Length: 328
Ligand code: HEM
Ligand SMILES: *[C@@H]1O[C@H](CO)[C@@H](O)[C@H](O)[C@H]1NC(C)=O
Ligand SMILES: CC(=O)N[C@H]1CO[C@H](CO)[C@@H](O)[C@@H]1O
Image 1 (tube, rainbow, N blue to C red):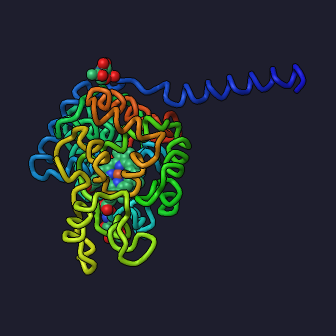
Image 2 (tube, rainbow, N blue to C red; image 1 turned 90 degrees about the vertical axis):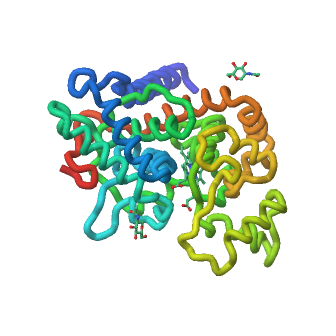
Image 3 (spheres, helix red, strand yellow; image 1 turned 135 degrees about the vertical axis):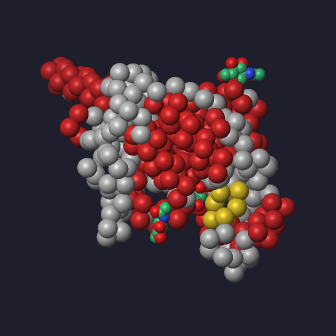
């Protein structure tokens, strides 16, 4: 390569880094200090109220944040409703997105908007990011400062979901590639998967593993046999498709590092969970997080912060929605 060529290349990558830097450079922990200084406590109180009514609030809200960020960036596009049923949330993958996650954001937004001065000042995307942090700490996980200043997007399509969300049957290579496409590392992937320490999965997400792994009646050999038998009891072949069971069979309502200990024992419910222990490269991280909950919490908070920076919209690329389910 000529000398001139590499200078151009160098300038080009500087510009690229600059663009990346500014795309989340505007996020700030105290973003609403002048416009709605009490936003954190208002959202927290609303999330707590909702959580006391139903514990499903926690996993539903956490998962909603993940889905929002992976599809078109953290812009609350996942909450938009379309009359023709063609929005992100209408993709079949949403069966999983329990209505309580949406409801949490809508209730918190109402609470924020009812405070004089705060009306229509805080984005739905930021409320979701705060609510996700709050449900983690409400279930016993770490708390952390949330960067704010995201605007809400105006676009939501069912089709955009398919290629942007991981599937339960993904192997490590596919998971890694999808997370890398959002700037997330293997450590981020393993740490964030620890979110499966709370919440539920429908039987069909893992029925192949317990009934017809490669051939009829065969059980996935990476599954603990006793656990697989329990799963067969809870999810018989004629099970109601709405039936969902705990992702963490040991401490299903507590945000802890038990998820990683489960993986060591062949009790990862989804293929995408167990593969983190089966594959040598990620097994080291699983073992670290299983043995050191502080290491897990640090890695999880770092990864959540990175997740929250994906595709953030600022300036005229977005708006502060008045109603989280509709563009203004
Ligand atoms: C690594 C790739 C991932 C895959 C393949 C995956 C897949 C799934 C699947 C299939 C379910 C069950 C859905 C259902 O049947 O209802 C689920 C639930 C859940 N996921 Fe993930 N997920 C992944 C990563 C994440 C991340 C990064 C987070 C958050 C940081 C997350 C949070 C959750 C939560 C909290 C639930 C429980 C939802 C509820 O009970 O309502 N997942 N995930
Ligand atoms: C656990 O991880 C934390 C954070 O990475 C580290 O400071 C600490 O030394 C680790 N503890 C042990 C017992 O290895
Ligand atoms: C919460 C939510 O929006 N759920 C929708 C998911 O998609 C099904 C159809 O695929 C709808 O019936 C649900 O209302």
